[in-house]
Amino acid sequence: MQRLRTYTVDEANNELPRVRRIVAQISELSTLLPELEDQARIAEYESKRKTGGAEDRDRHQQARDAVGGAELELLKAVASLNGMGIQLKGPLEGLIDFPSYRDGELIELCWKLGEEKVEHWHHIGEGFAGRRKI
Image (cartoon, rainbow, N blue to C red; front, side, top):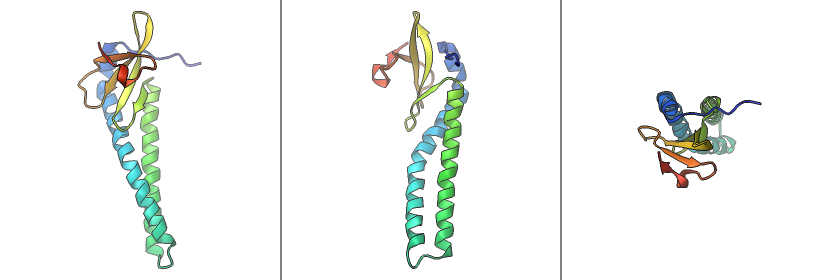
């Protein structure tokens, strides 16, 4: 069994340069993916029409490849966070939690894309609504 990686506030803030890039990529891909999926559905429809030709089938394959590529990059980015012991809580808004301890209790340090540093925490299970200033 893998031991839970926990962070102090300083350790979490020291990881932010790397984490910020990963979370920004996750947020961007999470926003882009539904659009790519829509394009793939439209291309599929056009390729299956009676008037659909080789060009439509190629466009459908390119759209499917774009979806697959974006999904793969998203999975890699999420795996990077997981490998660091960081929990993705909100992919679109770039919300993550760093496991930590406060007065001997397991808590989560909370950070959101756009924030300068880790300055909030909450009890396990409370989520963003339970955020408190450190």
